[in-house]
Length: 227
Image (cartoon, rainbow, N blue to C red; front, side, top):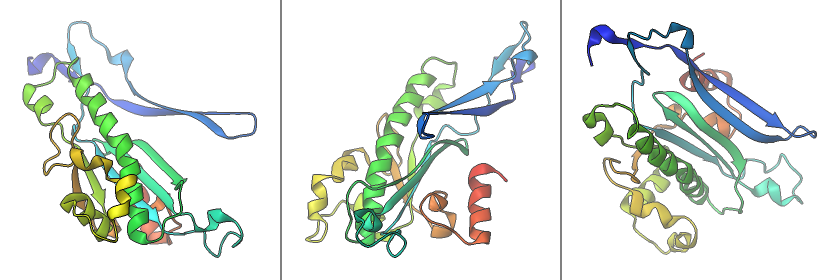
C-alpha cells in the first residue's frame, strides 16, 4: 500500500449503558468510532492501533468489607475482584465485583481473581485474531498477536507460572487451575497468555477493588483514563 495514498483516521471510544427501571445496569456497549467525514474515495484508510497485544491487569481485595458491613452478613467476608483489559493502552473491558465464594487467604483471593479474569482475556484474544484475518494487516503483525496478564501478588504469580501443586493449594484444582494449559512464556498463539509479575504501584486494576488515597488514585486514573 502506497504511503501517499494512506491516511490515518482519528477516532474515539463511545460507551453506552442501559439500565432497568430500578437503576441497575443491564447492558454495557463500547464502540470505536472513526471520522467518516474525512473519507476520500481516492485514498485508502487504515485504523491506527499502536499495539495488537491485549493486556490484562487484575487485582483482588481480601475480605475488604470486614468491619464495614455487619458481621452477620456473609458478604462482609467476601473478597472483591477487579480487572481491566486494555488494547493499545485503551480500556476495553473492566469489572469490579464480589467473588462468588468466600476465600481463606490473600493468595486464594488473588488466584481466584486471576483465573476469573482470564475467562475474559482469552476469548477476546481469539476474537482479535479472527478480526485480523478479515483486514489487510501485515502477516508479521498477525503472527505476533500476544496476550499478557499482569499479577502483583507473588504467590498467585508463581502458582500460575510454575504450576506446582502443594498441600496448601492442591484443592484449588477443582475451580481455578483450568487456565494452565493456556499459559506460555511469550503468549503467542490463538488461546495462549503470558503472565507477568507487576509492582503493586503499577497495577491498573487496583482502584477497582479498594478505596485509594489521593495520589495513588490520581496515578491509577491517569494510567487507565488518561487524565
